[in-house]
Image (cartoon, rainbow, N blue to C red; front, top):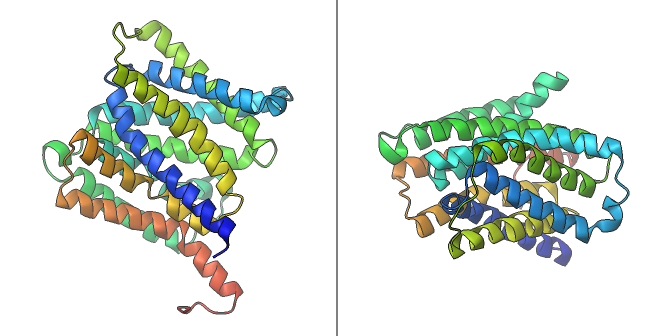
Length: 301
């Protein structure tokens, strides 16, 4: 394997670990900050840091860039709100796996918008995903039962799918750094609109709460974004999708280790189905296309 690809894959795996751990950190930090306030502060600090790092590119921002960023940012806002409030009522592990179902939703949303048939693999992926969600959320009372947190998390997957579609549209027309910064600014504006009148600033901010916020800003947003952008230049798309999808596994693992969450056997089976659905949705079509182009769809040695 090429050394640049190897290091890119290592960087992507590190990003998946950071994002996975962010589910547990976010749930814990919600004990200090209310949801809208937490998101507003997180993205305000991240936007400022990225703007200082890429000051030359940000200084060339046009009105059309700001408009695109606010459209993408509004969809990101809806996704984060549904995910964050969902995390209040469900476990970090379930939240992590249910969030990744957006990978399965994207092909069908593209079908609706572009009239382009997503392929039969999309239906196989959807079937696996539905089975996985069932095992994850319908496993009985308590931690395994379906609750409003699970419903909100599934809704967030729909919003994230729409956001990815909008990114695909605008990223071809503008600087991706500007798109990232402007959507973060949009997050701050939209979250602030609701946080200022409806939420209160915590009167007693613990060291743990500050450390959680620092992790979300520096590692889960700024650093993870920079590593992902750099790594994706060298790593094949199949590597990217497969490695980043392990975020859900690390999210469940950190929830169990650091928050003491319970992951039953039935929920583990559901997580395996969801992960299988992600593989079918992301890896299978590229693998078939690659083998077709080389004239063989058999197993290579």
